[in-house]
Length: 67
Image (cartoon, rainbow, N blue to C red; front, top):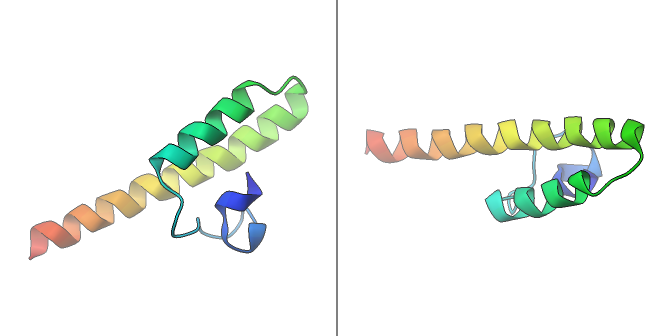
C-alpha cells in the first residue's frame, strides 16, 4: 500500500498516478491477505488512499464546473 503514497508513506498524500484501477488492484491484494492484523492495517491505509482519491476527483469536477 505504501507505494500508493508519496515517499512511500501512508501519512502523505497519494501519488499523482494513483487512480481507481490502482485502488481496485490494491484492494484485491488486501482481500487476499491471511494475516488479519496486517490486513486490518493495510486496509486502513487503503481506505485513506480511497478517501484522498475521491476528494481529488471531486475537486477536479468542481474546477470543471466553475469554468
